[in-house]
Image 1 (cartoon, rainbow, N blue to C red):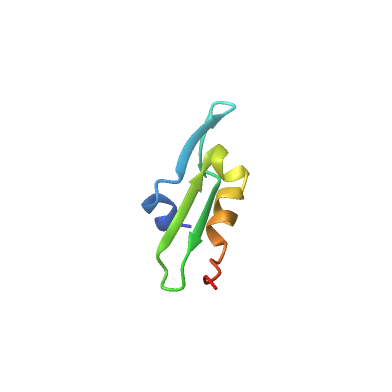
Image 2 (image 1 turned 90 degrees about the vertical axis):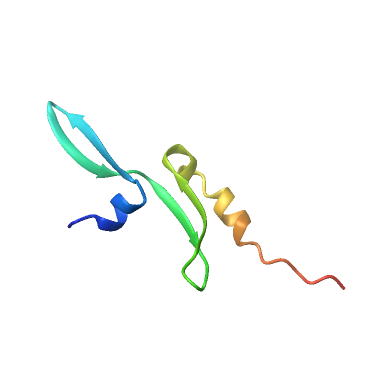
Length: 64
């Protein structure tokens, strides 16, 4: 794994566990539209609760 996407979005994080350094990915959630554009991003503690991403998915209903 070369982790290009992880590094491109700044989601890589180095931890030290028992004196050994380990590279890991931070928890994250993305909302991506049909064209591939990132509309919302959450990382770390914010990504644990997906409410913000779910709310952003709500499809607006046309006015009557």
